[in-house]
Length: 473
Image (tube, rainbow, N blue to C red; front, side, top):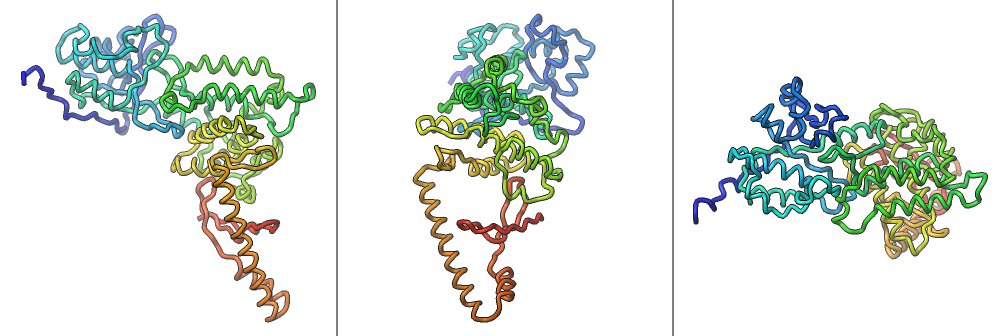
């Protein structure tokens, strides 16, 4: 084998970013006045604390690209490669990156090693269709971690020179969302434009067009079918952004396009006049409060009664509860109310849409995200022309489950009757009631919406009353 074919760096591995005290990452756009972004054709790369200190007194032009920054400000700059966020609703969770960012980093490292300003021959023929299209191309191409490794190994680039980091801006927006201070979840792409995944486009439409409206009763005084007409058009727009194809879940859509769709809906549909200004700020309820903050349920009960939206029964029995439980219950209730009656011919689309909407609740959850989302999915029901159906359970499974619970309830009822007959022989009615309260109810430990332990005494069977005693550990 010739010396030129020996790959020296195939066994190397990427580094992963670990934040240290006093260290932070910022987008390069923060070092350039926004009015200069287009003029300078600025592109995104990450600056650490050391980089930012060095570029304070430099001209904007020096921070317009990674290559320019390394050449003019910091030749020893540490290189960061941004990993795109992975959402719960995505079936394929392999780490992904923007091809343009990866290509610029690879080109820089090859130039640095060869000390040449020309684009390295090893990358000129790389099958990157995005790069060949030039800056006018608006479609963002995504590349997997496996493909990134292959690119680096094809070009024999030392992967240890690159540190993989999460999208720090998106992570910051998630933190704001969890304290009720943000609805507009988006990415800043390679050229400074706001873009979203398909699921995030649906999330945005939901926040802008669903929250704050009564989807149970038509409140418009001018049009008989105003609510239903509006609901169908909002669902049509959402379905346009949903997709059954796994690969397309990573597609990027310009935020500007989504906002134009929302503006058109609000301009053409009368029902949005019913969306009062105070309720447009729904996602800002409890603003500034952490998810584990315990507060009164007065606002929760007021809101669920006013619209009305379905309540979480365990939650509504309490005097106080964690903020996260209320937020999740509000949003799930609005999803259930908005999905409403689903016709059989569009049921698959309705369930698909419900899946995305429920999965988007991840932006409010701080721990055990997938476990909590699965619990919320099990709570998701819709009305199929008078029949209550669980959204993520087949008809056959629902029938079997219902039949199972009916048999269990009947057996429990017979056991109770036998116990009562036996105790009636022993004494008076007062003694019977006392012993029944002490002995017949067994305690079962459960977890509620906000992941707190609750104790449930008794269970519901037919028209029997549920007796609840809830405590937190």
